[in-house]
Image (cartoon, rainbow, N blue to C red; front, side):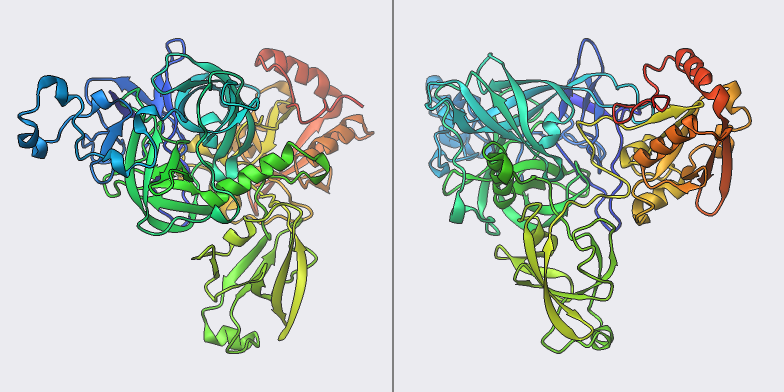
Length: 617
């Protein structure tokens, strides 16, 4: 039993998109102690965060709400079940009906929790769902040369493939949520009702849609994989379709199953990656530790989704979200393609057109754009530099069809039998695919082919399994602006510098601005006297020796040129928008000063692995 509280060090809240709910959170990591370190679990707010736990006798199912005690294994309809029949107990309403049953018979009484006859699989023998025990270590985005304290967490997953040719071999592939194994340093897999743990490793991961694959080489003997839909069987579930969520939520060690129905199908925000993608809402409870577990169809017993996040708080209860089968199928096809022909390899990264769009609900605007009564679509207002659309689409174009699917004036499309946001069409494709786009340009209909690329954001977000880029020169620490860095002021960003938050929300990339290079710290030394953090800290770099800085790589190269050039000084122009300052570093004193600063502040390296030392020619 646990009581959650927010930890200042490990609980970084995710800023919500404007107009979105503040309550979405990924429920997956139930964080355990490592060598006496503090416990933590996903906090019950809009975050992919961790909150520390104290071990107390009562159970609080979700923090951040009213504090009301609830059962963490309870579904929306109050129906729960365990793999162990001995764990089932009759409800109060059934007491009279079983009063005459003997003590030995009471263990086998089936209550109204879930009728075994409704299940498409043998509950007592089901072994395909596993618990993952993960040790992970996150980078420190404030001091990017170091890591945070290692932690342990648990999540769920399901066996989808056996390796080795037959059921007697112990190897297999496990499907889980990406946030369960993000930043993992060590993974163990445990079957239900088994004391044995087996080492696993991540073989594929796609953080954008919160999916991952873990391979184990032993321990899965006689485990039958969860049936996966193939080809025409891959579909979105129907509204009100009954599903079962299986996993290992907090509050117990046995496999838990909750039931619910599909209540909503739409493009939603994924709290782990901050990306928008297709998701399905169910009214079955998805609690901390449940993430990565399979969501199975009542009728077929096959996989219809993967549990990955839920709502938390007193105002929203009994809502969970799953990654639907079409998204899972695309991820698995990308992985299978990866493992076969390298020449035909397709990146699993989600593609994007890379355009800003305006809805055309205004009749006057449609008339201005020379649209006919039969026309509908959305207007391009900006084309991102380096995007799929650059060189093909223009500002003012009206997109009417994408990949053969008509767009409504509100930007929605009918796809997979549902009215969804346009992004669902593109995310069914792969990087490198050519997609036909029918558009209206200057009143004329034309069709162009767009080759899909990944979108490179000006301010990255949802970064995992990576090291923060940085360079330290003259006691000045520079790094690219990222959401992870901004979250050091708190997840809601209300205390973060407004000029940097503005770049996160509204910054536009271009040929001379692919990243925002921030002066994030000033480590005081003789070399930088007069340039205090109060005066120039948290500015972003506009130029080096008069040359614009497009990204971090260009910035580091400009420093190298300055160090080995003939100029006496390196001049940095830094800004907070319209207010500019100049920082000057004396080249002759720079290398010796950097060596002393590195030793004084005990910094292992003056740059990240992304760059060479600026003093190397």
